[in-house]
Image 1 (cartoon, rainbow, N blue to C red):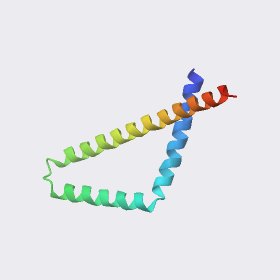
Image 2 (image 1 turned 45 degrees about the vertical axis):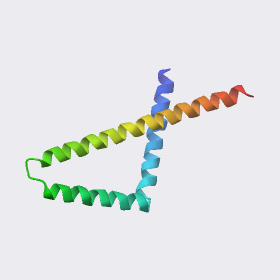
Image 3 (image 1 turned 90 degrees about the vertical axis):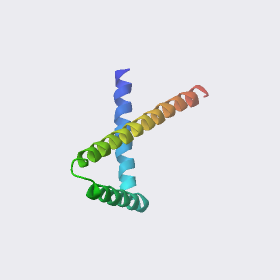
Image 4 (image 1 turned 90 degrees about the horizontal axis):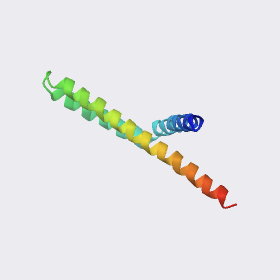
Length: 92
């Protein structure tokens, strides 16, 4: 069972890297990313100094949350794919 978990983790990691590379090369993704950075910088510039650390903490937590969400999605997709392959094999 540990071997299967390691394989799932490796596949998930490989797939995540592949998808990240796909997103980075997307013009839509790049444009939206630039807009987000600009808005974040605008907020940061207009905040009092004592509030700025809170903004950075918020950004860090949102990044962690997004990453965790992606992990759940990828792992579920792998499990679904494995389940589907088992169904297809049993139908033969």
